Figure 1 (tube, helix red, strand yellow):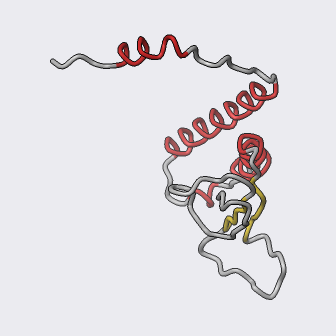
Figure 2: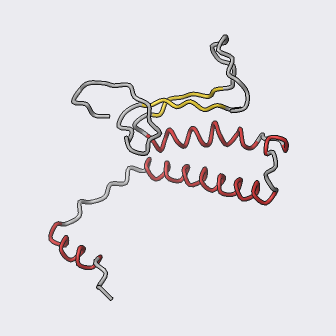
Figure 3: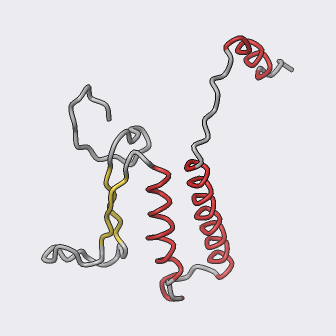
Length: 133
């Protein structure tokens, strides 16, 4: 959050306040199991930092944290989830992880887009208008 040079700590789900700098996340690996507050780290809460380089961070989180966890899930971890739902989830998850890798490659090629010529602005606005029926 940009506060004119002042830093602030706040908690959000990201829906209304967007990340503009660094952020941290916390993920309970087993919501049904209580967290052992006597240990500094008991593998029940995963945590990490998200930087302004969101695609890079998201790629790391998905492909190096969540994907290995999902790939190692045994049948009991899925509960009553049907096989078809597991297959669909894994398929969509795999596709998302792959698309993140591709997005990261695209960003790393340093593609820069030219500024849209202002002389075409009115034409673009007029073309996007849908005529009334």
